[in-house]
Length: 305
Ligand code: CP
Picture 1 (cartoon, rainbow, N blue to C red):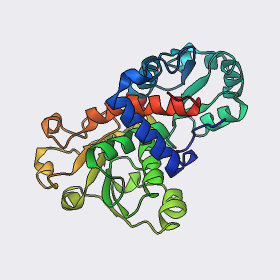
Picture 2: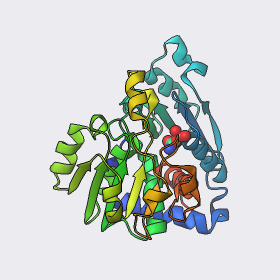
Picture 3: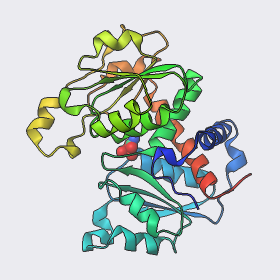
């Protein structure tokens, strides 16, 4: 039985299989409409979500399966003090597969150690978000046509941004990837990622505090939100929240085929005027999240059509 806790829990070959399966689901969704008949997905969300939870649920419904779960810790027995380990032991007898989001880094990993069903990390604190990464990779593959030879700008909260952490881990496995990290000094990517991941594998990257000068060199710009919920101090959040705002003026500096991705939700870091630019693909990206989660569920359950 396989769990997906980190993006590295899937080999490049497994990723390729899932992305190809997702592309086939986009092309011929009817082929898959009964493949999970009689199966149940549990969505255990201890932290708010719109896209991840609902796209997991839509994915299971598209496959002909059923869903059960909770959307906040308050509406589960976690509010009475139940541990993740006890919860997953019980859920293992109610469902066939589970997606878990938790504010504490490592909670889905703990769950996987006590689970008898596959556990998918749907985001753990500021750590990892592997199914967002699958969504990002499918978006890049479909709309850019390749996963290699890319200069990727990642902008915003790189310290707490789990989507960025997972994306970096996944993308460095492809040839000729370079990162431009754009963030305020306080929100730089964590040292462990620099040392253990980027430096250890000689991945080229630069760190800058201003977006405009680097715009012309980017093939992809991955924007992220400054996350209020990760700050201990409201004053720091207010000081940093408007550090980067992508608008049409800045988009004029970019390549004609540069794509703008964002895991969403957006607050104000992308001005709504950018939504009409054909290079802004974040809503399409969110749509791909359903297909890639369908492909992941099928793969982890060992199902084929
Ligand atoms: N991208 C993402 O994780 O969105 P939600 O927080 O709405 O699930």
